[in-house]
Image (tube, rainbow, N blue to C red):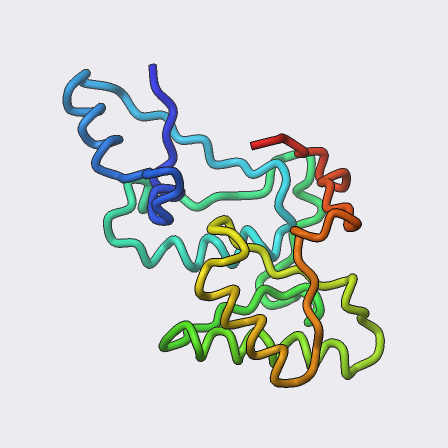
Amino acid sequence: MAVGDDDQSIYGFRDANIKFIHRFKEDYKAREFYLTENYRCPHPVIEAANDFIARNSRRMKSQISCRINDKRKHLALAPGKTPENERVDMVCCSDIQSQAVYTAGCIKTLLDQGSTTPRDIAVISRQGIEYPALVAVRMALANWEFKSVTALDPALDFSCSKSGNSRKR
């Protein structure tokens, strides 16, 4: 038995690649079982993920969407009923610089509204602080004289206590 998620392989996370799942299936005449219940993401995130992932023409489970698990079904909202402040926006940028300027602009807008502080905002990347996109975001923020802080600052506590998923890597 093997467990794999073709939806995760689109990111190339830790060298994930859909070809490994296909090869395993062919080599071992493996049967497929789909785990489609999501136990941790809020409904708006699941909706946005389904919309985004559905665009993958090489998806193995193309006829099946992820759904909120049964115990949390009461939290699911009718399509189009998600409050604006809980919606997930998907934005397509033409390059890293455009992405950085857009991200920095969103951060500036949040801060200018006055109800958000810099400690309420996180820009997360699995590539690390020197990843070109994060460098570009920090540069765009610097243009607005906004000082960014990073997880490299030992005085900051970035534990995952909210999600309960704190693991050392």
